[in-house]
Length: 308
Length: 254
Image (cartoon, rainbow over all chains, first blue to last red; front, side):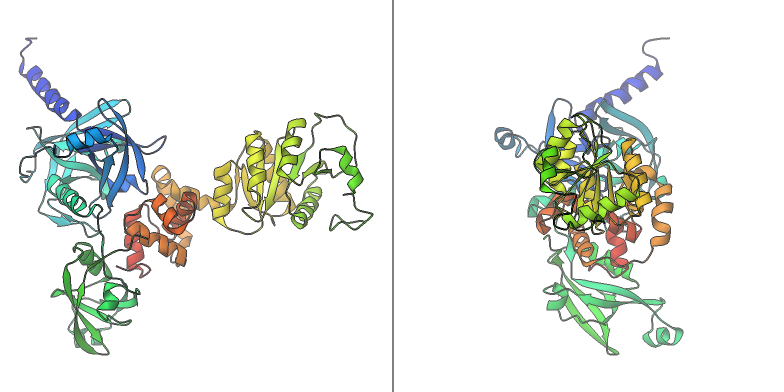
């Protein structure tokens, strides 16, 4: 066969694209058995899957040339993004402080695009090619994470690829691959990762939005439902207010029934949880509540969930 | 005497004169046999807790273990393990009292079985983490105790049935649906304890297990065992699921 056959060119180009991304692929050692992948986002920063990191505080990292130790500095269960800071010597840190890798402005992925997932195991870098199986609009995860684009990948996935980089045919890192429900493989877009990275750069950790109320769903009978003008059958009732919390400061009381949040009907406990989770600490929200049969409007400044 | 209960002055088998048979702090239990050093005895009962020792001894005798050595001090246990071929060691009492004995037994390569006075799976977990081959409640029937000793002697690990759910749910990613079926079906809707809620709140804030351990001044293993119980109660496989489900049940604030 001719050495410059189309098949060979195709294969060479694919291999070259993967090869370029390999320097960004990190293996993250969680225990004796569990190794997952990560993306070297900056010299001192590695992005990986929060769910797999679990409660770990320090992990070992293997890169092309280095074996490093990293500290888990943020885990966002709502977007499945975890950030690890590589412990490097001070000389390196100074040199690398401003050397963040510039990335092309994120453009939306298209269904049917060819992509590769590039990860690393302790035995070396790994890659699989696949297709963007679904490219939807921005979505909100079940846990309240705002994710810039719904991306599902058609790739032969195994757990070692969790947290691996998804590259397009230009070699740009466009997403992180994570397992989703029903054995789907999801892509968490670069833009979403940048948002989390920016928050951690700003605060030094990832503040979790919190107002300090516990909610219980109440079942509404037909009469009550029509009297309240509610479409849904349940309503969220305040079952507890944490001492010293933003909700207490805003005088939310036990037994208040939640009608709306910022004008949106608060249909269920899940719905409320999702809306609070996607808010930012410092932001003010308006809650309409029913107290003793009378509607009241309360403004609450979103706080940060206590960390000790 | 002559029960194996509290030693009564003068007629107890625990006569000081009999201590000559072994190192200080070691009391032969059965009639002194005068066997040479290096002999095999059936088990060593190592605890400083006298009432506990007497209760367990009675059980062991009932279970057919009539060839017991007793070590009252960790140092005595170390001596005994050095001079006998015995590897089966029963330590126990109220956790964490047995830890010193357990450490000696593990370091000597023995097979320690831990009997706990109260049911606390943190203690079971810590004992197992330290190298115990079995962690059981001290009030198990004599027949169960005998079976557990035989199993440990054969190289197996013996757990309380309640520990199975914890183990399975902690390793749910490997056991998959089997773990769900075994651990979750009958256990829905149990409320969290306040400690569990506290720990889950810290999980929701993004704190690592070690960070939680530091915040609450407990060991990281204790945090893990609490979390295993939380996951079990909330039917959750992941931290995110546990947090979401606790919020849904009104057990965690948002």
